[in-house]
Amino acid sequence: MNNRRVVITGLGMITPVGVGTENSFSALLAGKSGAGTIKAFDASAFDSKIACEAWDYNPDNYFTAKDQRRYTRFIQFAMIAAKEAWAMSGLDINKEDPFRVGTILGSGIGSLAIIEQQYQILQEKGPSKVSPFLVSGMIVNEAAGVVAMEIGAKGVNYAPVTACATGGHAIGEAFRAIKHGYIDMAVTGGTEACITPLSVAGFSSLRALSTRNDDPKKASRPFTASRDGFVIGEGAGVIILEEYEHAKARGANIIAEMAGYGATGDAYHLTAPDSSGTPGAMAVKLCMKEAGVNPEDVDYINAHGTSTPLNDKIETSVIKQALGDAAYKTAVSSTKSMTGHLLGGAGAVELAVIALSVSRNVMPPTINYEDADPECDLDYVPNVAREKTVNVALSNSLGFGGHNVCVAVKKFK
Image (cartoon, rainbow, N blue to C red; front, side):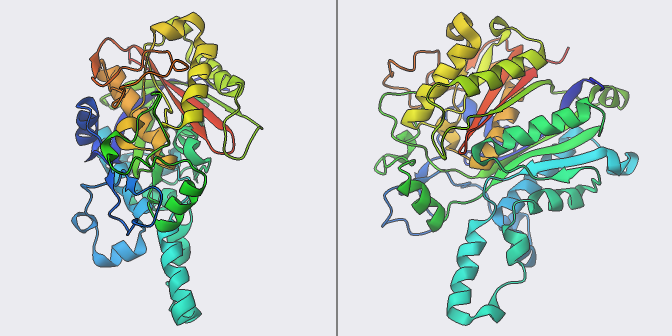
């Protein structure tokens, strides 16, 4: 088994706080909230009327009317983020063996919007009027398929689906595929666009969403005593991972080193995390072991930090179990306080965030941190970004079904 070094050479993001990596990251450092009253549909009858939509995104700027029918929103997001990441990497598919370029890119749900729309057409107009783009528009793997087509990548191509851990799993598996020699480069990450009536109704029925409808920008408030649920978001993160010697040979700009990946399962509950925190802590420990770092080496953790009562308390326990006393000296923040929860896209956007944190020595804040929860007693980088040397950063992702992922990034040296 090979153990090759893997580096990050490209990043792409589309988020509720900006289209593009620089726009998104600068907004996060500024503490900008992406939350607002839902515009995607009339949510007046819903318990939760707020979301973090990709407000600055206009499909007309990127796609023809025909292509907008062909590519549903979650696929569009993946395509835009992938093109940005590929351009940043400086790779040219015509100079590579396309079978050594993999695409591992997932989504938690795919497109509920086209399902809802076409089901209504079926009911009202009959089966002959259902769109031929329904199947390709709704299934999760089409984001990976279309991205590979756009780039010309012919290596391993699949789409992990692990709810909110999807992006983390995709990147971790791509990292391993390169590390162990199966491919040399990967286009990897996660995408999501399901701010739809059915989705919001479903999450509301689970009582997972914040109902702070009168003050959307204050609604996502991870690790506070007054948190009452997550704010649903949308967007995508795409990462270009590359074998180090390959990147070095072509003179690539290396952003950071991908260093570790740990994944476990709770085997506990359909939606709630294991209250002991033990499986989540094991994922963090496995990640640190592969990265070759000790707890005291970790400078920053981008937490899953959803702003739900259960998640934040248990994740705090996860971090303390994994890092021991060093947890109290480690900066932890949740960028979901600004982006909301991008579900299958969250882990990928947050991996891009820690790569930039390591590269630029700055940590985004947890905004809306106004009332501390005694059960959440770590340093959550409250309200203001912090400049500090970041040599090692982790990102946690925890998904419905008990999926736990931790990924590690190191400063490239």
